[in-house]
Image 1 (cartoon, rainbow, N blue to C red):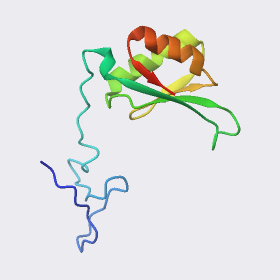
Image 2: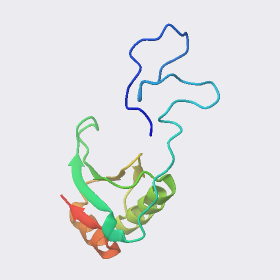
Image 3: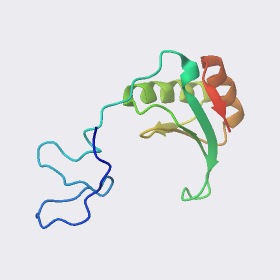
Image 4: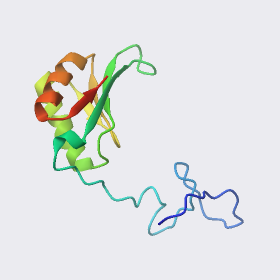
Length: 121
């Protein structure tokens, strides 16, 4: 089990990762870059999708964010593509979230519930 202690000071001249605070190894990277993708639960009820609308820092444009998803890039890319196609809008995916342009909460509740996910927000 990995220790939760972060690096506070080091006289070593290597770089320190901004995200996780651990030294960056030239070959392997840091702790956060070597994390393995999470397994996607077989039962869709194991996934709780949290919906919210953000507009801060986006020039006044609203974006619907689906957060709390498994940290699995392949799963998120597929889900983002399906949702963008179903809503007819653009979007992207992040580390554990999917972002769609506009306020699409009502439509996304229907789509995600039909897929079997637990939807909050």
